[in-house]
Length: 345
Image (cartoon, rainbow, N blue to C red; front, side):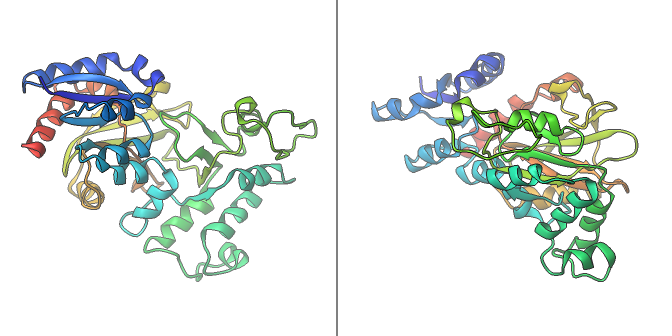
């Protein structure tokens, strides 16, 4: 019997054995067996002569997707999707001219560490820093004092509004997942300091000091590439919406909300509810799916103060627990398997 591989890292496989079982049950109906494979074993197995029918890469590691593509093995999602969607800054830059997206800048480790270490980085100064990096067609002084400055994209005015009205800014790793490694710059400075501390550094004065060190002994975000963006809030709650897509088709939309935490992820205790998209919202989603050839993905939107959808992230390795929780009648794994079989017939 030919096999379908689901590729995980060790930690991910331990968490998702039930998900693998769901794929196994649906692929057996097509005469295929599902095998869970660790990402560090894939090359050895291929070199030993094994050749799966297709592969689902369920770990964030774009070179793994590319490896299978170079061997002519169908992989979901593709290397292009994995490369773009697992870099939050790259995702927003790719779609910025297509749809309204959260304004963002990408900072290397030394850059954001220096930013956090500067004295007097209150909200006004942080906003000015962001303007200087994000909007390049006018001076920061002009941008802060005038509405006549040239916007950088078709959505320049609304981008500017989100920046000017932000009550804080969000700092997050470019490849984080599930709401982890996401911080409020003004509201969680000590948490950022702890997570960004380098081995052996002295920070008794409350300032970051970038030093060369063994990254194994550092905090989880020390030296990492980060995305900085304004905090987007709609009314009194933090909310976002995940739209699940398979191929070019919208499967479902789930609203996530929290009155306590700006990270409204289901895994962090956010409330979830199935919602219907209006035609205008569907058009926005379709503008995104027309650009990339997804297998399955989760497209995440925030909402600005006027209720407009604002693209925030695209999850390449999208989980579906919250969809099954609030809409058990929608078997997205079954739909995904059927779609893949149609692609490979």
